[in-house]
Length: 188
View 1: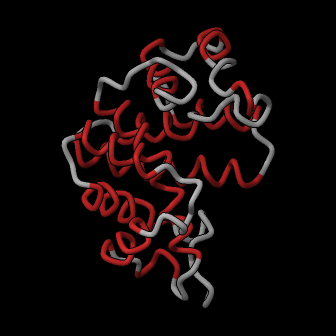
View 2: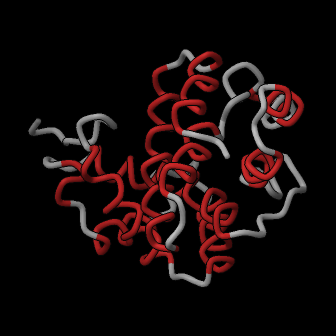
């Protein structure tokens, strides 16, 4: 099973751009919260979240095409590699999310982008971000327009949860790490 230390070692050897590392951390903390929600192994889910964009910096146009062979060669479990591949379902892979781990990664990858954008606009960042405020921005298609709301809805549907529920879980999971993920807000 993939450990967080190993995920960081692998990802940090590939990813040098600060914004991509920041995204990996956002997804990692959101995945930890999703693991808690489902009663699963928090560190394992965080590790998969941190490693999910392993090949993106080097191959943005071929995302996830340089992941499977490479990570398997590095000793990453096939199930964890499959989970990583599944976050590109319908976009750049045909690996359909089946487990709660896979469905969560598929969903929170996009969702954390909107959470991050919301928090960055607030004086106190994510520290006092409420789901109600998030949902207002989620409904505004012009806000964080590159984040695919239909994909987020589809992922939430797969999980059997409302968007507001998943957003609440992720916000709570990310909040304690506000400083590390640069979401303390404009007052900080």
